[in-house]
Amino acid sequence: MSRVASRDEQGESRVAWWRRMSRRMDKASEQFAVQVQDIVLLRRDLDDSFYDDLLEVLLAADVGMATAEPVITTLRRRVLEERIPDAEAALMALKEEMVAVLEARDRVLRLDARPSVVLVVGVNGNGKTTTIGKLAHRLRTEGGSVLVAAADTYRAAAIEQLRVWAERAKAPVVAHQHGADPGAVVYDAIQAGVARGIEVILVDTAGRLHTKAPLMEELKKIQRVVQRLVPDGPHETLLVLEAPTGMNALTQARAFHDALGVTGLVLTKLDGTARGGTLLAIEAELGIPVKLVGMGEGIDDLNVFDPRAYLDALFAGVLQVHS
Image (tube, rainbow, N blue to C red):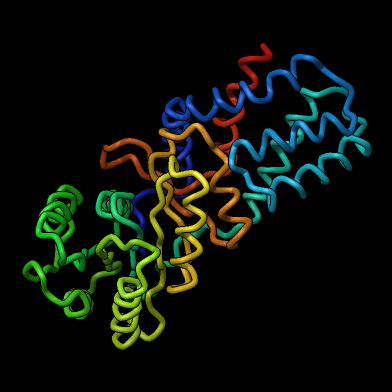
């Protein structure tokens, strides 16, 4: 996809966005700081009890055992090898280990095919429609052409809501009447996208309770429609999750991944959670990377996930407590 901004300009824009958004993560940062302040302030010996307490802190933040335990094991080794002197320095080393874990994952959106089809799924109320509007705006701002498929045909309000967001993003919409076959909408959208030379087709879907098998089967049908027209599609299947749902998001992610093969996660309301580690747990358990994060209701409030900026924001409260 063509880009109107250089890589340097995009990098500067991302840094500015995360700097602004990190101020909204104060709930998670403050909660994390409260949980670790005794460990840091008391400057206890770096003994077994220190590591046990640190593990408990990570688990309380919903980091998950699959991530927390190996990170703590690596930290123990670093403390010995580098002769790390105290709890504060060990905590900063912990952050770097967590950064390394997150930065090892590939978070690039695969949008090189023409057209690239992106299936956006999730349970009701997690922000799929607004995410599509924000993503359409982001891609358009970067110089791409985008078309939106209104495949949530069960609620007339959903189609209208999508039209509003797409209009804000200056992206055309393919929609049928309320109650129409979602697969037919996707078929027409792809046909239209090919005819117009559209680069990216974003497919909105009806909210699915991950426990309802018939509803999940319909998503598989939409996936098959895409594959008939675009054999290597969908190129991305993005699952939208709300950060404040905590570890329940892991249950949702597992169900959607088993059914569809989710390629990336979009975490919304990152500024509304006190448990900042959920995304680490999901990534470790399922191997699905968080590719996009949203904070706020503005059309610009969506960006690619930056592991270092995220952990800088999460650990900011710890530094403030110690200073």
